[in-house]
Picture 1 (spheres, rainbow, N blue to C red):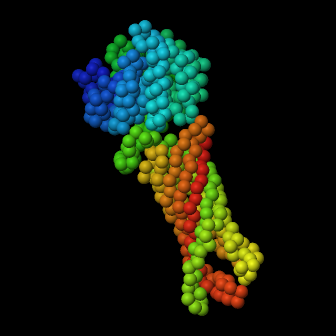
Picture 2: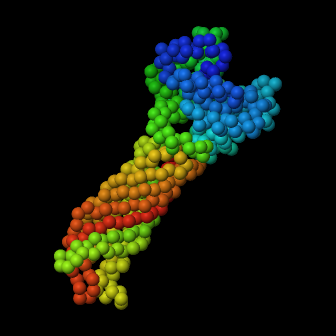
Picture 3: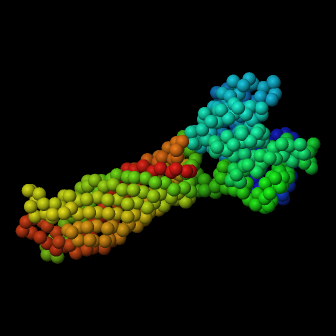
Length: 463
Ligand SMILES: [Zn+2]
Ligand SMILES: [Zn+2]
């Protein structure tokens, strides 16, 4: 289980925080996500995650603190994102219940600004909502451009509100209040798809039955999970598994080890975004200029190196991100060499152009998968299905390349323009007739490689 919302940084946990977390572990809690209230608590929260490796942080300004939120405070939130184990912006939102809080207009402004920080940084948001359903939905709907992800924590509201939140791609979590006898929320629980349902306690508040009235703590997330399983008619273990999987997916908890592998690239200032399209398919097209370099070894006389430069080429791509740093690519490229044709200046040429078809299967590796701009290296193999001098000549080739790609998240998927330089080395040599002039036609062993600087565009419908 993962408790995705527990204020264990509050002073009420100061005397026994270690024991509280130990009890949670004994109940099967793998991780605890600790949301922030204001920037004043950041330093303390930093110390807590340093001490407990299974505690993660969200950073943000709670609507209760929105009255004091100025530009400096918002900048502090954005700067704090680079600290270890910060996985979300939160909790943020609107609270119209208490009369002594900042007025709705101020709260909405602070909420929206933080939603934008989250989008800029590719982090999910944790939304607090009390008696402000319409305004929360409106702001989320206005800001949703395909890049906004998050959870409505301590869900309250009706089925209509729930459906609209789910349509926006949001996750939902319920707290101990669903264990209370008169809770009407029970009917909504089965409506949440299992991949969108999260667990939380909201410790020290919202203590579930049978501990109601006492201080809540992450170990009690078990009672919330049991109630959710009962309401959904699901086995307890299955519910724990699906909610843990959903929490890991939303907050990317558990990919920390990978981040540590590339510490330099993973934190290169505020202009970085998370890699959002991992583990999905992309499709694309590309254009290239194909330069064919032939290494000819004549059976009589000297050898020579000869090139046909800048032949237009084009093709299509299938891309699969199976890992944050690694992806697989299947590409097809077609080009025609018309420079071998007979012309008035070259009357000894051929009647038909040479055709080069390249089918490549490559592995891409990016050292900075969380950047807006990704560098990558390519290694792979290719089948060259060429038609040269009217003769079919099939070869295998070794493929290497380097490139740059850009992540452009939009409402209809992720677009990824890229540019790279690729070399395909044909293996082995082939005997071939080479025309040097109208009277000089020689037999040669020909080896060749293709130099393909190319640009393309990939589209990931889902990420
Ligand atoms: Zn809250
Ligand atoms: Zn809270």
